Image (cartoon, rainbow, N blue to C red; front, side, top):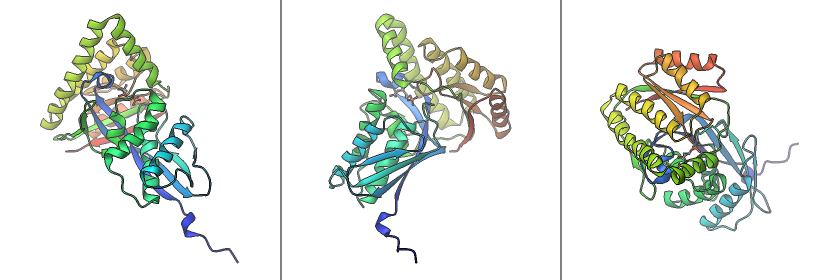
Length: 310
Ligand code: PMV
């Protein structure tokens, strides 16, 4: 006869979706606003299993920053009024790593949620944000906090450093198509490249960053008013400004060009750039399908479609 299963050893799950930056990446690091959306085509699931001994974190795919995640797990237990030990955490994820879809922040959010649930403790969002940013700082240096806020709130937001995130209205029906180009980007290096440009060409860099921040307001107005053509133009302009900042490259420009030739209303890199994902805006499902087909044919590692609904 099988031994009875100890119910206390069953894993407690925490989940988190990915994120997409619509406009304002890099500008947000320097105090300008950015717009981001939760991305439900991908997710992370963290399993918390009570075990004796120190906290352990293992992952099927996410091999970076396990030490940072362990520190976040220990701090989460303390925030839940527990000793910083006694759990094994296992991470499963469909978010490609290094692609700009928020894999590191989503992993930390899922882990904090799993542990808080296992401890039957409700953590206020502000505490969870601090815990997630602990892991994010180890992964990226000085994150703006945009990824963590978008994934935690699971709502489209306008985000500005040192300000509360503001939920934004989507008065539009449109389709976003996202391709993972298959080349991992390095957020820390891309952010450092912009900082370098600020040092060497301050006027040009500041003008690009301010213009990118301004595009967040234009995008927000276009989203609220259902003006998809105007939104597409904002995305195109944002990609040009990111190129001027040196975070696009020939390969990303080619991916963006493919989407535009397939009929996209606008297209840009999303996230830190120099690899990772590109996104395109389509007015209807047929246009979205044509863009997805063009990217698939060009050898994208993954192509996703998400409907924007008001
Ligand atoms: O790590 P990514 O690709 O999601 O990029 C984050 C966006 C940046 O603005 C470049 C950095 C940040 O901390 O906001």
